[in-house]
Amino acid sequence: MIPARVPRIVQWLLPGYTWRIPTKERVLHLTFDDGPIPGVTPWVLDVLAQAGAKATFFCIGRNCEAEPRILDRIRAEGHGVGDHTWDHPRGRRTDTETYLKSVARSSELTSRSVFRPPYGSLTREQARALRANYRIVLWDVLSGDYDPRVDADECTRRVITHALPGSIVVFHDSLKAESTLRGALPRILEHFSQEGYRFEALPFAMAG
Image (cartoon, rainbow, N blue to C red):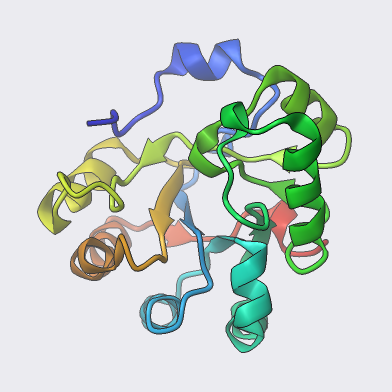
């Protein structure tokens, strides 16, 4: 099972990425990868709206092309949008030219300035090329909602235990993660709301 929190030494050794937003305020940045997906993403948007929460959606280009109304709703409701490639390739298994074309194609629908690599996987060459035009956003807390070994209780525990002010937390608005997400997200929002936290979109993902 992948650890819930990225060790600080890893964040320190890879300074070219955004891992969290430094702050002492009780703010969390929830992010959702792999959408938009009918049935899942609209439910996430409903739950966020009920909690008065804003988030950032790292969207796959081909899903945006298939579901433009959901993408429009994400933006209309004040959430951030980032690029997550056209077809979700794994960077270290894809040649740089093909990978960059996937990013560029998706950016026409998603974001020309904010990018998250699928699986957090990039080669040095890919990262160097992308940093010229994009802010590359990773995370410091991984909910594990996509992992069949992580149920809703464990997903909730992982986030509640490890999230700190300014944390960037990864969820997935995907069919694979749906069951766990439905059981965990409302509880996570309720817990941190009771602790005085607010939920904000990443500020640099609001346009572009």
